Image (cartoon, rainbow, N blue to C red; front, side):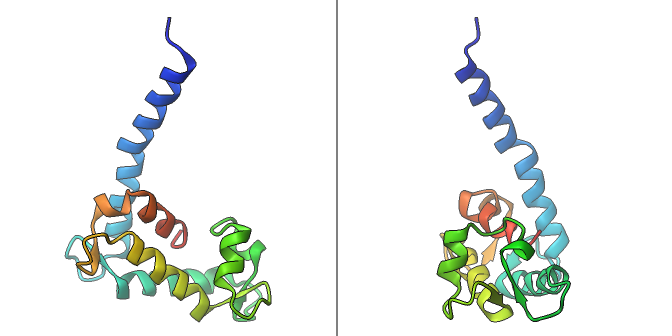
Length: 130
């Protein structure tokens, strides 16, 4: 008899090895403007800036929790909001993007490949780009 724990572990492993890798590879293809097979900070910030504009339907230049749609937890939003107004400006949003980029880049080579994007830190960064 197969335990629930074994099934859960198998599903987790399948998710991590299949679609997650595919998603990180697709992110590289989608945002890699110089076609070098990796994402650098400029490419990531360009993608984040475009998404910011899309997420800001009222065009007030800020994103609130509703507009962020779960990309940041309430705690993460509060930490990223130095003026404590409950919203993120583009600069504040890009600061979070840069922090997550650096966290996903353990070899400090200035680029992220599909493997790095599939790490926990890489997936956190990708949530800010989708």
